[in-house]
Length: 392
Image 1 (spheres, rainbow, N blue to C red):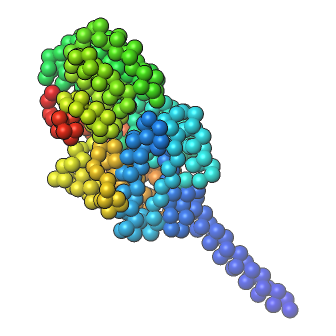
Image 2 (image 1 turned 180 degrees about the vertical axis):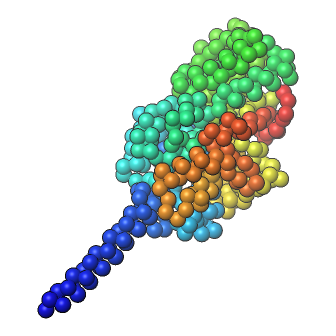
Image 3 (image 1 turned 120 degrees about the vertical axis):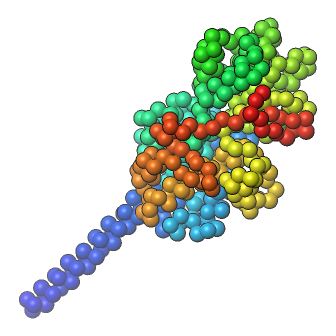
């Protein structure tokens, strides 16, 4: 009887050890919410409806195209990548609510493809507190490049870099000295304003005039009057496609034709569509390669992935940026290993800092200081298409 009880106790100990080992292994596999045996769940809070909806929708298309491509090849370590997108209307308060919903209700592993500076300013404290990866935000705001924000994964050039590119080309290529600015009156616009002022100050220049508008509106008449009085040779624009198009058309109706230069966040394709014949000659800086240049393998892969996902979609700059962000996330997950955690993913991204995405180098974290992302210049043509240029 004693021998039986001893044997039973040994069996129970062995069973308990097996259970604890299995539980430990399961915990290692499921250390973070959003990771199951066959899926890794990503969340996106972005403008999907309203006056800036083209930006969020195009980012979403690019991300899903990449995820579809990756999943067709077996996913990452056997898990498929899935995206839940929620509309924040490019409004900070709504973005907070939708981000919390993604974290607490949808239980996503990471956030990707958020759109906007004011929305990011509102949501970053939440994502940082939860140490949730915040991958590929569609904004070049300087505050997101603070090394203390270790959960933020930037892939694009900063607005300051874009501003430096504008001012260098306008002053060196065109020899302009009277430059005005039209900007959105919030954290996004003021970030661009600061970058332009710094670039001008380096050259001993100041802004000729400033004009502002409110986010999610097209009330640009007051800004137009302010800028027209200064008669600038060029107007740099820090806004979304709707108000920027409205401003340019208003200027043209008044027979005023300065050189217009737009920031990448404008949404180049949406801007060209809004402008129609008024778009000819408008400059837009970009932070991704030319999305029609299939001689670049990254672009060719993007085009193929987008066509496989939805043959009706056409290439554009914003969806290419979303595609790159998603490919980066997948590449980092591959290196993180079969038991991904949020902390592990961020550690890989920050420590490696250089990722080969279809032959194109994408840098992150401190590596951006050594190899900063490029800024490209494009010009809208008479037919609404784009031409890449090296000089203005």
